[in-house]
Amino acid sequence: MWPWEHLAVGYVAYSLSTRAFGSGAPRGAAVIALAVGTQFPDLVDKPLAWALGVLPSGHSLAHSVFFAVPASALAVVVGAALGRRRVGVAFGFGYLAHLPGDVVSPMLLGGRANVGFLFWPVVPAPESEASIGFVEMVGYLFGRYLNEVLTGQLSAYVAVELGLLASVALLWVLDGMPPVRTAFARGQDETASVPDEEVP
Image 1 (cartoon, rainbow, N blue to C red):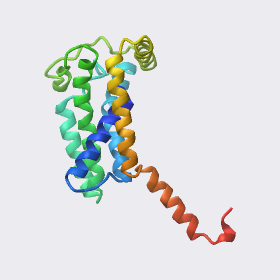
Image 2 (image 1 turned 90 degrees about the vertical axis):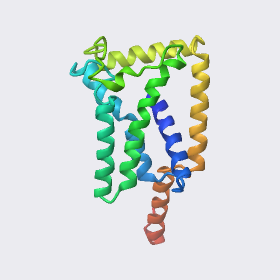
Image 3 (image 1 turned 180 degrees about the vertical axis):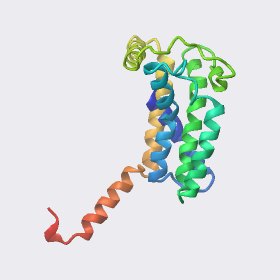
Image 4 (image 1 turned 45 degrees about the horizontal axis):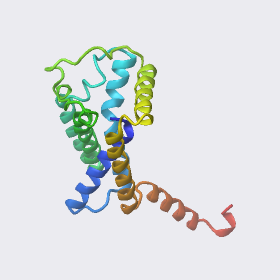
């Protein structure tokens, strides 16, 4: 999945979960932590595999449940210790929401669900991606994606993606556009607290 797809899936799932459990709409700092969490496995695995060749695949260490579950639990514990439990939970939620997306996304492309990477290193990862070069790999994948979209080969996939992006945009607006609205409100408060003659 692409970064914006992981973010969209994570945000929709998190927003609906917070509402279902009576916490209301997501809030600013938690949404930022959620966004980082949804990207975290790729931020770890892709550079270590594609650029440095330390990992065998872009879906290995940080995509494995043996790493992801303890790391997410640690985020919750650290967040609670710092008095920011909601932020820690949001990061862990985003992180764990990333994994099912990578499991089911091949099915949208006509393939089979990919579950092997979840159990790395017990299930070995293919080493074909290692040391290919980060920029080269991203360029290759994005070029292939654009070609398939422009030639209409991904019509079902694109329909699902557009529906997902429209849903997350609508939900984000209904949630009050966190954290943008929070930052804007703070800016307004600071401006209002300055005497008129000092406002440029």
